[in-house]
Amino acid sequence: MIDLQGAELDDVIAAEKKQVAFEYHNEAWADGISDGIEAEILAETAISTALTELVRLHGEAEVLEFVKELQQRVEFGEFRAIELLQ
Image (cartoon, rainbow, N blue to C red; front, side):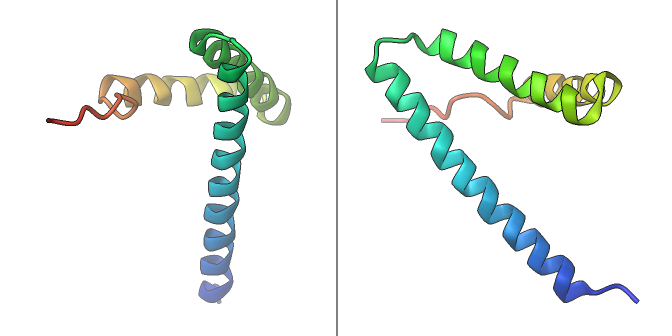
């Protein structure tokens, strides 16, 4: 029998951890910008650090699949900046 309540709780905990991680990254990003580091440099180093850790944890083959999925997400516009109409 599957423990749905436990699985749901795990999903909630994971979502909360992602939100906190997002906040940490935003704070570090803002600090870097305040210190005069260009956004492009921050972005490239963040991606490099993330990929290095993912390869360490999951291996190159799995990370290559993840990168392919990222390519599709970029092509579908998932990461486009939201433009507000004025």
